[in-house]
Image (tube, rainbow, N blue to C red; front, side, top):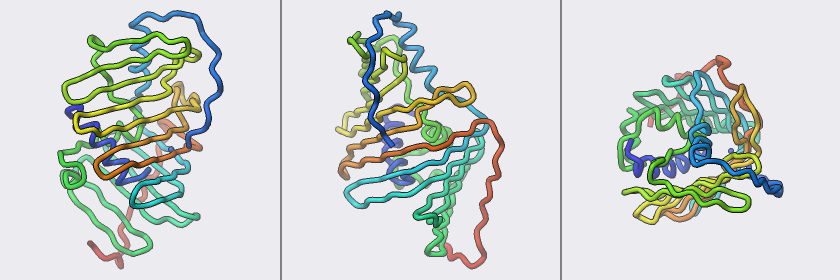
Length: 253
């Protein structure tokens, strides 16, 4: 998918699904070790993960112009084939979403209704075609990688700042020198849309270093949105049941 489309999709999908809480980061201790350009750029590449099974549970808070939502989520992903998201409020499931490479279905539990459509119909929300692998990348917390040749690296006392100006999108990454982990990612496009993701509380899961706390801020023509997510548990490459059935009495929208 084209980078500008990926950027718009990140904003749109986060707003649609509202599926991680940002906690104050500890004061960094200065690390005077200098890393090479290649080592710094490798941090971005190694941030992304590729797994067969992925499961995450946690709390979420969404604050936008139209609504404020707090609740919990349960996400399960079978690599390259199926994703399921359950959203709960006060322990009661409000919605369950199943996404495949070809279509998606949403069960509205409280209304006893459901809708299903080809994944291509997500164009109505995003304005362009969306592929399953792009949704999967977002769910895993993977980032859009910049052009390593044209990227500019600034060496600060506590951070490395990597900037890249592309034809359709500008990307900026902040890496803590103390632990060489990404602390913030920012995307800006030509239409003055912006998404900023602050990452903290990294924990090792099956050899992967994954940020369990994320503060996502998006600026679009529709206004500002803020999504705070706190992941309580992540499981990798452990097969999970993907129970998804449409009750006979549910009305199709």
